[in-house]
Length: 239
Image 1 (cartoon, rainbow, N blue to C red):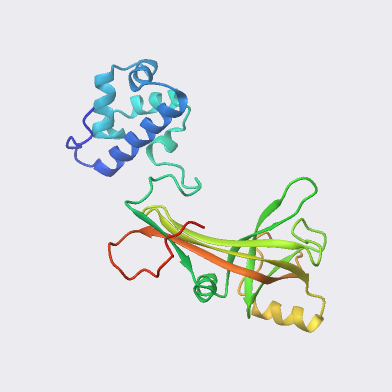
Image 2 (cartoon, one colour):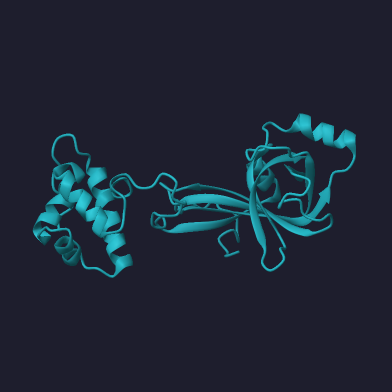
């Protein structure tokens, strides 16, 4: 099937390529050949080739039938799911996995954002997203007094923040390991309230501040190799 054919006016080649990639991936997941998918959608393999070459506007009805055969919504096939977790594209060419210094880790954390707190649960570890605020060399977040994220003081916890560039198959992550401390001093709580840039996205009454006191701060960045010699020695080592 030739995916380099010229698409009709008004249909972007990128759209046709994206749909082709989703069809190929979904057929593999379902254990179907493209010929079998075409037959189930009521079209010949050659017609499926035209549909993939020219994009979904070539025959919207056939595109709808194909999506149903593949167990996808029409929008999922044509546009992709906007809420799909990152990491769908292939790895970049010659990727490099580099270590971040502790200073670089704090730079990426910034002053506030959304991260994930991990702590022991009754049977399994619990990981939850939280709005966080950086206070000196600590991280703090607000939760409800008896909320799931209201971990016990002194508990060992992990805190992770990352950013992913799906288009470039690159990104970074910062991981803090330390202990949780419930902020009990009213003046300290008021100061953190003033320091916080946003209210917790989850809403509701969330007046308990949990401070994470780091014992380790580590980070990684993955990006395509540039071929230069400026990378620090050892940063390409695996974590």
